[in-house]
Image (tube, rainbow, N blue to C red; front, side, top):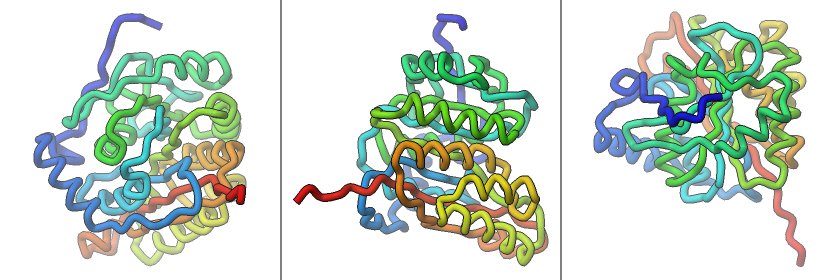
Amino acid sequence: MSTAASIRRSVVAGMFYTKKPDALRKDLDGMFSAVEKKPVPGRILGIVAPHAGYMYSGPTAAAAYAQVMGEKYDTVVVVSPSHHEFFEGVSVYPGEMYETPLGQVRIDTALRTEILAAGRVLRPTETGHRQEHAIEVQLPFLQYALGEFLLLPLVVGHQTRDACFSLAETLAEVLKGRNALLVASTDLSHYYPSIVARRMDQVFAEDVEKFDPATLMDHLDEGVAEACGGGPAVSVMMALRRLGATRMEVVAQCNSGDITGEDESVVGYLSAVAWLSQVSST
């Protein structure tokens, strides 16, 4: 891996969300102010959030990120699918920073070294990161909600059961004892009539609510549920369970037809949070 500093610049600013910092903050202000932060009986360890244009899925994503508003995490690990490049395994960004209109986010280079040493399916490469929007669109939400944090961006290529389960094992191993937030970036079903999409998306939502990543993997393989980042969601959920998270709850769900009024061909969106229950010692 090159030691030269490298920055992954924004590639969908101006398309998926505004590229003007002040306007972006205003958009985030509006989305977060519309969400009520719910009392969660424990420490939030993980999030599932969509990655479409903010006009479509932004409010759904904000519903999850609002639950960690003002919290402090040393590192955020974002696991996304690859929409533009096909490859095997999991791509770990080898550079120094990811950039959005709200500023630069430093890569957790120490954690990167550790996860590369521990994981057999992970490789240091820009493949999967160059044009991928599924990580980038999460970052302004994280910057707004958390302020400062280190980032570890991971892109899953071919979402095989072996790759997803192996990644989960590695994440659980390297994140044990760390103050980290795990984020799975995924939309749900794509381009079905709304009545069909809702049925498929409900299967995904029920598996999330049951906190059952193995069954979710089965349903994705069988085609009864669909999600472009289904594999990343499985990996994150499985890692969260191994890290001690005890509950996962869907906090928002809709599809693009709910925004546009066009129900013939929609994309589904869901956000959820997982937490570690805190038992009182008194």
